[in-house]
Image (tube, rainbow, N blue to C red):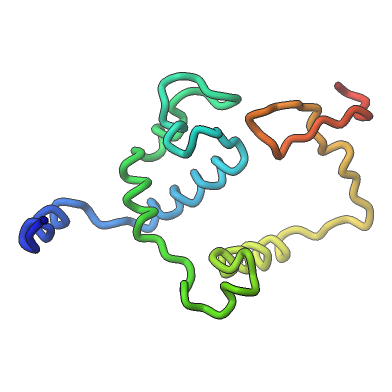
Length: 139
């Protein structure tokens, strides 16, 4: 078991988490959501090409160990909250609320929206968010 003095010495060598690093962590998590790799988040630092994303793209923005270190200290919700039993997205609800308010101020949807033109003609097994639309004219 590690002694308290050793833990303090080890932690004193780690630099503080900067605000820009938190923003990069969130951006990388959003990028992972858009282009997921089934092998896990660590695969985004792989030197071999996996899926639609070029190899080691995340490494350009943040080292893998630094991302995991920063994520270890990010706490967005209270685990003892009564909302935990009612809302499936309770851990990220404050973030979702801020994003919804922010985007609602900047984007006013037109009266008619066509989703067909935004559909990607893709059958990618790496990104389950993309769905093949057989009726799309541009295949």
